[in-house]
Length: 366
Image (cartoon, rainbow, N blue to C red; front, side, top):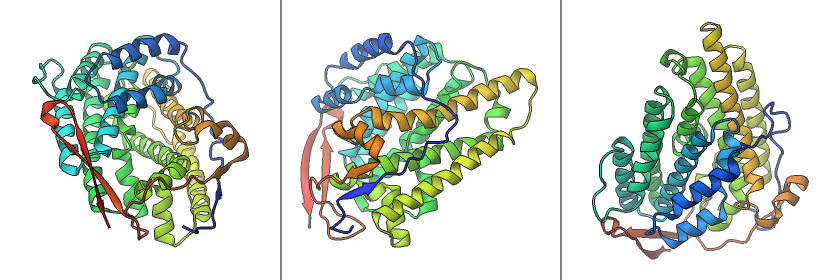
């Protein structure tokens, strides 16, 4: 990165996206319920409680699913809460530590009626309760899709931990394929059908699958553009599309942002054109398909909106940056080994998984 670069321009990728911002009317009530549920797990790491308080996850779900019932909004809140814990804990873990956590969560996901072992890390019980609520409330066709897609996401997180430990950097095509799974969007696309019984022949049709992949890629582009400033500062940008583009094409940050914005436009066109190519399965099913794809399209808008409504990526300057599109680069918090060279890597090793708590040890590699 050019040391003279102090500010980057953030292109506005969503100017022409047809799905407008909307907020679920059950948001306030469900936020309180979900907050009590999250804090009921008293052995959670204090850092996780801080993260939960800092990021309004219920608001994110209410943006993503603006029309579902309060009961189903609660399901979404629990899913995102579990993802928060999984992402935060595995990000601080070695590959082996991350796999231990993932194994716990997958077992609880698939066995919602199984009593969790005494002393197990609390995310197992969180996932068990979340899966049990989903089983009771969402549609019979949606639940197995949610289980399968969430399992795919969890396994991808375990692989991500290996890549982080070994400093892997993928090419652009492989990056998108990988992020469709590790980015955690597949379970949410499954949950776009939680209030309908969408037939398998529809859900798994190549035209629908292509739309889901396209939407996931749109979210990856938007997420990696808005999160780049934070990630370059804390040394985790090795897994960012912006870094991948900089490395693959030898570009600076501004040019990589421009490439990402242009690619976003291509994906938008592909998604909109794809709507016209969806087959007909008869009037009653076609209504469900339209509702389902509207939900997927809304997720792209919701992800973008939350990036600015929340302070995770831009702090108190979010509103100003959304208007000016100018992002002051944050100073680096610490050095980290990078495929761009010269950084040290800090690995946080998670221990004592089976005892229900973590001790983190920082080891620096020159």
